Length: 174
Length: 285
Image (cartoon, rainbow over all chains, first blue to last red; front, side, top):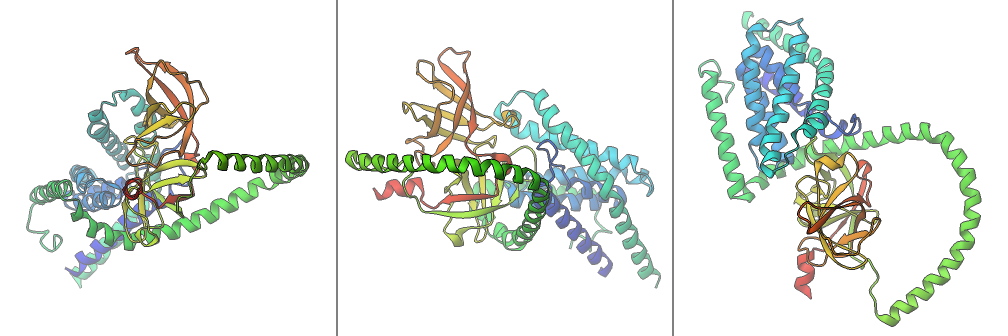
């Protein structure tokens, strides 16, 4: 239980850092007015490294934080991030530590799914029909930027996960 | 708690439970808005100060970077400005006398000045909406400074948006360029009404859409749009921007146009929040 608590707190800290990065830091470094979707990265990483359960929980907390801060309602982003984390968890069985290609692709796929769902739910429903425009000017640049950021912060996440795992095994054996 | 039981409950059941929690939260937040207030209060008190800190550092860094980049430009500009200053000083004297005359005439006609002295409070922008789809941002002052939901937000002398949510030490502003925004506006020249509608699609080009302009109106490009008298949320007479690219709609009854906003939305750091509300103002009268 102590082990779980420590893991949980560290994950919470990572989410908080990513949230602050996204809302307070990256508004200074946008490319063509586009920000990356950083909170998707821990969701993806923990889903891949630890399976559906943790992907889901990390996604849920990330989404909830966004909802509380920026949403009109509480719940939609939590739901969306949670399902993305859960689905990423299915890729846990093909995950191995050194691989960087799969996380990059997953990160892009997540952001694509995210963009499409946001478009269909909150734009198409208000008859903003020009899908091509939104696809080229919002979704695609965001995917590229998010994948670039994945390249930078995925490795540290893997290291943190390995460190946690070593500690946990150490405690179980001792 | 979830984590204690995690060896026993299969993930799909947790997913099911959390999905229900989410749906319940969505339902609750639609049905009773006040449910959200305590939650937002907690995050507002804990996370907003962190964003404020980062914002301070960010501003400092950008300031320094800008300073280094600008120093040479500034020297050249300084020379140029010094020469211009002399010219303007004499011009200023003439304008001053004109202004005095104008004031006298205004008194004669009992006209109000164009911007009545609304009580305002200055605030800093500390964070922006996390995504690329909408345009909302957070200010570093809230109900402690007297800000309420529905307060108009200005920068310079143009309209920025409206406060949609307030906590003790922060408030959330929806910009008029947000895709959900719709402001009732009128032409300064002939007081005819139209709507200024935020649209993500035109945001990149720096435009806002203007819709429902009567096609028989005598308006031309460059005309100034201000907030209208009939809006129940925006105080009248605040500049929104200038009209460009007028086109006739396919229904042959109305025109649409692009609006160049009076405010530079790429670069908002400080804003003025008008403490007076439209509704309370009318209530008093």
